[in-house]
Structures are given as structure tokens and as C-alpha cells.
Image 1: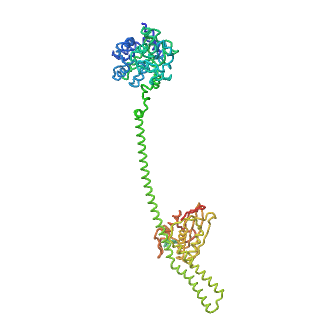
Image 2: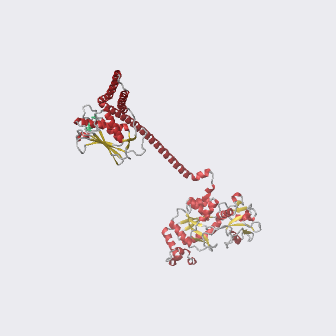
Image 3: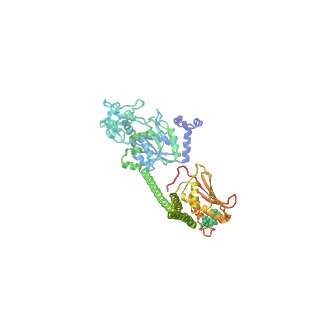
Length: 611
Ligand code: ADP
């Protein structure tokens, strides 16, 4: 049998099997498959571009060959035009379709059909370069030589959606600067079958016509067109067998509908690949890449790319509304989130502001309470010292009185010498200054004032406090200052009056403790520095305190004195802590008594805080 001599599909088998299996083996396989699957009708839809009768004639041999290779199957051939074929796929009326490349691409996008083979011309066997178009004109039209000459002419074609019958030439015209949509040339659509186009040109209704490549040659062979009456415009030099004006595109596609059984598709593919070339030299090959057809459609903005023509807002909205809606939702979500965050931030800021205001209010209340306490404490110290204060003031006043009376007596006795007068006046002035000094110190000490921080020389403060104590009570023991502060680290940032209050309190307690045991030893004050701090220690030679009492030393209202308030040390502790220090008590290492000590941070150079 002659068909067994051809083995085109054996090339797709593994090299080891190909020689042994061959085409006869494939037919055996097909037979086995058909037996297993059971005989059934296969509905094959074809595009009848030359009309139903022509299609019957064109595709009947293919149907017969396929039936021979698929035993037990009857193949129903159904002819459709472009729209009917699409509807047939929609309605599930066909398992396979055969159509032109352009229509295939449209149906692939629309109905998900998939190509299993591409028709090729026997001479080239290249499935990617099969379909082309020819522009035919009357031979005698000498004015029509190139595509550009069609400007202003009338161009006949079967239909606007015919791939080889119009669209290939449409794209060629665009590439040559002509646009049929703008009437350059004017299209004249005759409808199928294609020979109507030839008639339009022959009758002079159109200057040129678009035919599928090789149709003119076939019509001339059949005698429908007298040879030499028509010629192909601008024929391509690289295509020899027919006159072709356009670029060549992939051949017709044999495709399976979306729901077709894959086993059936494979069987049909094997049968197609095993077919010999038909009378026109057409056969079937592996499917071609139809990407160039997509490119053509994109260029023409038709088929799956028709949307590219739509540029109005409505069209853009229609095309991109899901994206626009998504974006709008995203923006809305982002906006709502931002608003919520903004709202939370504002609420938190309000809460923080009010908490801060409350804290400032409480601090102010605390500060004013502290100042009140300080003031009361100072008054309390003065109250305790009031008795001796009166005595101290009495002394300068008595001295002043004595000098005044002595002046009077001398003046009455007539022996008031200028020298005596001068000396007495100087003494009176000195005594009154002493009294004024005592009162000034007390007034300053008792004055109500708010918190200040300024660099203070600690040794200076100790001396002034000692003077104040002695000014109030001349019988007070001496204050022995042991100053070990380095020249560059003598100042602390403090409220001088508050530190004076602390020192005076410590001196007074030390004096009380010594008086209780009858000691008139000097109260020792030592100043030392280390690790950025200044340490002050006040040591007395009193009776000291038991460890239990030492623990209660800084409790408010703790006192062992009959007339004591028990507030002095607790206020001192608060003052020292407010300055960043700590007040503590310890038993001296050498003998009886008590050491009260505190340390304060040394002031950096030029550091000060306004009051
Ligand atoms: P007040 O002097 O009014 O009693 P303070 O708070 O100044 O209040 O002192 C509390 C108590 O601490 C004193 O009553 C005393 O018992 C004890 N005290 C303070 N300083 C000394 C000291 N240097 N030696 C012994 N006891 C002291």
C-alpha cells in the first residue's frame, strides 16, 4: 500500500523505536486506540471560505484519509463561515476545527481551542510561512505597479474579517503608508466566495482585488479566468510557485475544541502527521507558532486586540475598571487607615498633654509644699534659737547704751575729748552693725523664697553658716573646717540658702548633742571630693545614737528633745535629695559622737540655672 511508504511522523518517535515502528506501526496503534475507545462520530468544523460546495470538495479527501486511519470512526464534515464556526464551538457542536490562522487566533482567545497541527505546502514544509495574499489588477493597468499606486483606488476583498482575503494586505498597505480605513484605497467587500473579487476586478468595479495566494493561478488553470487578463501586484521575489504580495504567515490550523478528549486529539494528530500530500500539495505538520498572527492583529488593532482602538474614557473605564476599582479601594483603605492613625495619635497626644499638665500641676503643688516646709523649718530653728537670739541682740544694744551714756557723762563733766568721742561713736557704729548683721542674717534666713540653683562654694557656705550660728549664739562651740577640696572642684550647683539651712541644722544638732554631755570640743566639718561629687561630713563629740535610734533619725517628728519638733533632719534629707545627693548618719571611727554626712554633684564649669 503506497501510504506505508511515507513515514513523516516517525521523526517524532524515539530514535531507537522509529525505524522499527514506522508508519504502519502508527496505524496499528491508531487501530488499537479506536478499538479501545469504541467507534464514534467525530464532528469536524471547517471554514468554508469558498462556499459550502467548494469546502466539501476541498476537505472530503482529508475526511476520507482520516476515516481510513481511525477505524470505526465516522467523520462528519460541517461547513461554516467565520461567525458560524465560532457559534458551533460555543454550542459544543464540533470536536475539531480547521480554519485560517487569523480565525484560529481569534477562536483560541474566545473559546480556548488548541492547535494540534498546521497545514503546510508540500514544497516548503515550513508551517510558519504558508498563508499569503495576492493583490490582483488588470494586466493592462500600467498605472498600478506598486502597493503605493493604490492610493485613491478601489480595492475589492471578500470581507473585512477575512485573514488571507483581506487582513494580510491591509497590514501591507499600512506598512506602505496607506490606510484603507481612511479610504486609501477604498475597500469594496464582495462577500464569499472569493471568485467574486475576481469578477469585481474584471468588470472594472474595483481597481484591484485581494485573493488568497495561488487562487489566481488555480482559477486560470480551471479556465475561470483567462490567463494573462490579471496579474499580481508587486509579487515577492522569494516565493516561486505563486504570485504573493504579502508576507507569509503560518498555515491553516487543525485545532481541538476545549472539551475534546486528549486521547482522541492524539490519535487525530498521529493520523494527520501520517497523511500524504493532497492534490494541491498540502499536507499537515506539527503546529506552527502563531505569534506573528498575534503581532498582525495587534498592528491592525483587531480580533483579541480590538480594545486598543478604544481610547475614550468610557472605553478605558470599561477595560480597566477592575484595576481602577482595586486602586480606589486601596486608596480608600489607605485613607481610612491614615485617618484612624491620625485620630489615635491626636487622642494619645491629648491624653499625654493632659497627663503632662497634671504632672506639672502636681509638681508645682509639691514644690510649693516643700517651700512651705522649708520655711517652717527655718522658722522652727529660729524659734528654738529665739531665747539665745534675744540675749545676743541684747549685748550690742547694751554696749551701744553704755557708750552713749559714757559720752553724756563726759560731756556733762566737761572732759569729752574729740578722741573719746570718736572712739565711742566708732564702737556704737560697730555694735549697731553687728546687731544689724544678726537681724539681716535672720531675716534672709527666714524669708519665703522659691527654688534656685546656682554655683556655690561649699567652704564659703560652711563659713557663713558657722558665722550665722555664732552670731545667734556666741557660746556656740567653734566650727573647725578641714577643707580638702581641690581648687578646680569646689562648687556645687545648689540653692545656697537651703544648703545653709541644712548646715545650720546639723551644727545646731551637734551643739545640742555636745551640750548634753558637757563637751565644748569644736564641731569638725570636713570637705572632700571624688568621682565628680563633693562630700560634706559634720562630726560632733556628743553622746551619739544607738543603731536603733539611728534608723529612725530621718523620720518626721522623731525627736529626743523635750522641746524638739523632730522635723529638722527629715527636711534636710528632702533638701539634699532634691539636690541629687543623699544624707546619712554614721558613728565616728575614733571615739564618741555622731557623723552626719552628705554628698552633692560638683558643678561643671559655667553651669547655672536661673532661679
Ligand atoms: P529636733 O532637733 O527638733 O529633735 P531633728 O530632726 O533635727 O529634730 O533631730 C531629731 C533627733 O535626732 C534629735 O531629737 C536627736 O535625738 C537626734 N539627733 C540629731 N542629731 C544628733 C546628733 N548630732 N547627735 C545625737 N543625736 C542627734
